[in-house]
Image (cartoon, rainbow, N blue to C red; front, side, top):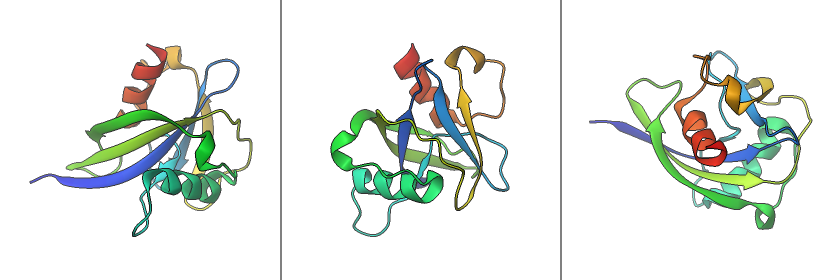
Length: 131
């Protein structure tokens, strides 16, 4: 039996088309910023809260655009799959990493193929948006 995690994630892109990614402390893979919902929290509310907690950027639900829902292998939990609701936001966060986030990196979609440190969800979302 496969374990599932429910998460919300947010896509931020800069003027060059790069995607903002984060790497959590103690892990090796870069992923979209976001995280797990609290009890009773909607996917959009989860996204807003997680972005504030992880990268110190205040966003509002009305500026989120649904990219889609994805079912992908979890990046850091073997044998676990993610059910992810992914939103795009027009902002360009530039704050420092907060909470459990160790690194932020803007990644060019064309440079992703040679990297083995990217989460499956990130690859799926970039393929949908940049393809």
